[in-house]
Length: 259
Image 1: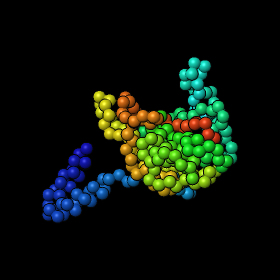
Image 2: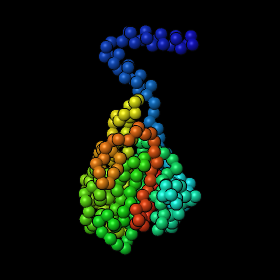
Image 3: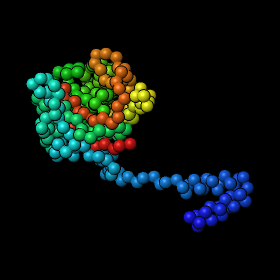
């Protein structure tokens, strides 16, 4: 302790002897020395591969590691199935007839999510009936998945829309049967100490590498039909869900970074 005090005294004496310009330079240098180094994260081999600090949500093998599947009991109340019934094939997972939505076992707040998805190559239906699914954030807010290649529907219901709120800036959908990607950067809402709403959630989305949602404000929980509004109670971290909407949509290479 005495040694530290002596060192601080010498530094103070040195500082007092400097000119105003030298003092500014001295303080700048001290800030550089005291500032912690930026954390090193090893990037993936490609931009689609997970970096070293990512949580792997699906690696092409067992979905039960990170996911659980919802279902309905005889009383029509939602339940959790004993195991995931989605089909795993060729490193991807696909919803099957009679299956429920998938939900992560973990909960998240602010994050960067990478996910790749594919709608069926055989076109059946039109509008919202073609390759319909969605990514539900914190179980409340939805980013739409849809076959939007030469498929007309309402603007805020096509692929990469913040469903029923914000249409994507552009439509960069690939052909049916081709793999597509979303990279989602999400900032969760903040609430006051009395649980009232403080700041809205915001989301940025890249669809196939193209910016389609630019830090937009999410106006409330996803509702359809209706107007989104914040009537919910304050919430903390929540799960991510892959929606089963009756269409066989496939997913692969799912990873997330907590921010």
